[in-house]
Length: 114
Length: 113
Image 1 (tube, each protein chain N blue to C red):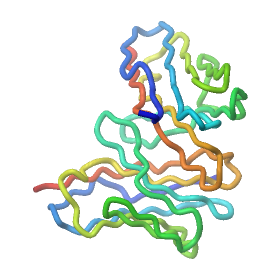
Image 2: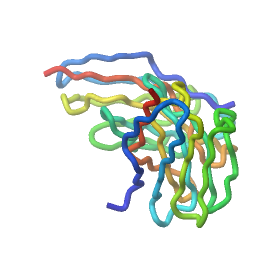
Image 3: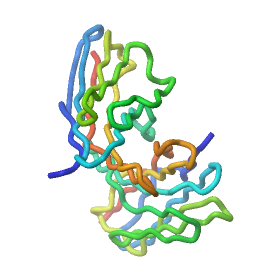
Image 4: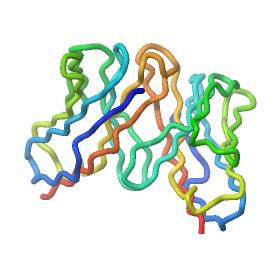
């Protein structure tokens, strides 16, 4: 399978704990995106990388959120001091950045903060 | 900024009925337009796309035509199946957005046998 993969698929954590999600994009894609989706809503953009450079961050990404893509391949999204409002699906996606720029999504990582 | 508006759901149809899900957008220039499908508990799968005006995207019996004059990209299927039950998202990639997509809120389709 050469699609976008995310790990873990589900995470339940207590409020105040830190969590980290990993994303492995399609291998030849140089752009990597993180989105957040809550029930009944469409995905909301959080941040994106061009290779290892983080080029844009949404205002939705508070100081408790940090994303990295150290070698321009896989990426991690860490949430510190989780809050119940962080409960959502975190979607990773990648693209080649060419014309039309189709974005391919992973299966998502469900976070439940209790 | 860019935005996407989808018809409100949920939509419930009988098997073999005709489907239309409306989508309109606001964007600068000529964005690329997409429909994604999401099955319960899963991520988004690209269904079809169109990158310029009057293009028709099609896949698995679904079609959508990029209408610049009405800023629309309505999704249609002539005969739906129970397996088409899912949430459908319209999205755009704006020319000034560095490739990131803006999504509508999704339309839930339920097809009954």
